[in-house]
Length: 167
Image (cartoon, rainbow, N blue to C red):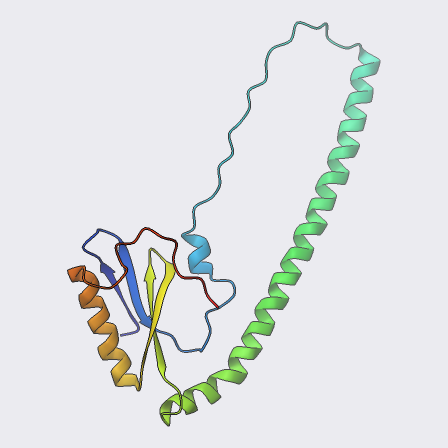
């Protein structure tokens, strides 16, 4: 079993799982999916009692507006494309590093030179990482942590402080 989802005694969803790589990914789509979005407040326009502009002024406003719209949205499209290329490049670099590191890390963990991290997430955000000596020990530790979460006895689980930041 890869991970356990647990509803803690405080009603919060916790996830306890083994981590295969020695680091957490720089961009976690799971955390992004479950992160709240910032909603700005909309301002209301007040009605004006000015006279409508003439036909020539309307044409000039429309022309300038369309040109600005094309420039702005063309720039946005280029910016979005560059951001997408940058993110895909980062993702590919991360993938290559993972493929290079995974055999070494797994060999070190299989021979007992490295410990297995067991990660605890609170509402899909990193909360704590504990370590076990071997793969079976990591499964036991994972089950113990899940039981502590169900019982509400895990140290620090009732604190309302921000979750631990990745190093």
